Length: 69
Image 1 (cartoon, one colour):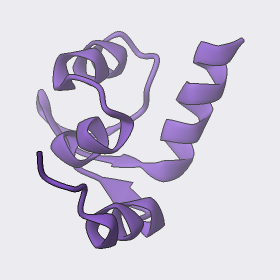
Image 2 (cartoon, helix red, strand yellow):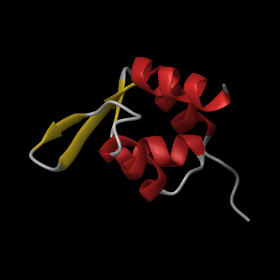
Image 3 (spheres, rainbow, N blue to C red):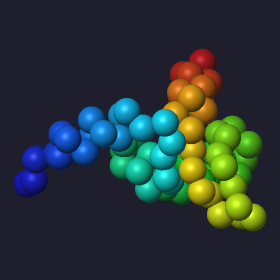
Image 4 (spheres, one colour):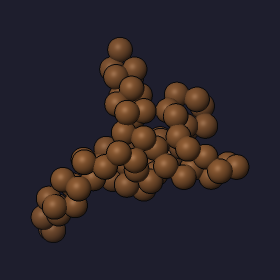
């Protein structure tokens, strides 16, 4: 079993924006969970047409807080 790449995780935690794939890896979620939240209006994301371009860290934190409540 491979050890997690701590350097990559630390870098991801410091980013202001994430791709769908980066955020899914960071939160240990399948991308479709995030896609569903984005297309359902629960999680804000920068879109070009129907393509998810990026997701801001602040919006991720708001979404996570809303899921807790």
